[in-house]
Image (cartoon, rainbow, N blue to C red; front, side, top):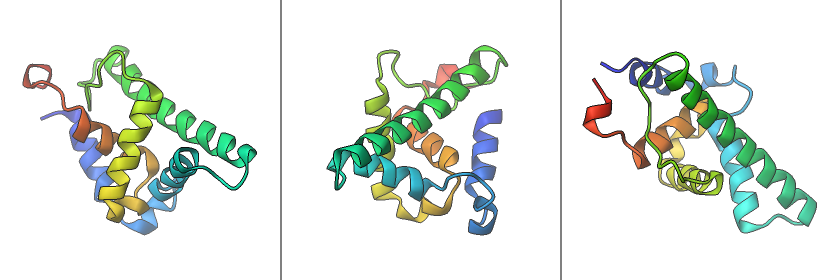
Length: 127
């Protein structure tokens, strides 16, 4: 069984009260991404929301890459090498639109679930 998948499943099963212990909920980051995609009331808000969304997605993606390359863990998802942060953010936004019940999860867990759903690893990459 994949260690990363097991950890992710455990995180996904946490209650809303436990999720409140994390910095940002999935709803918060999804709102940043929506503001950036749909436009905020002013350009500064749109820019700040877009930067926050992309920075959060980049942090999750970089952590996944680090765990795979430096710690030897199995990947949680296998995004194409040429995937852009914008593409990963749109994957997350789409996931959250379809899975509103995940809004109280820690944002990192929801990002991982979204990327895992859209970019599953080939069976050869998973023991």
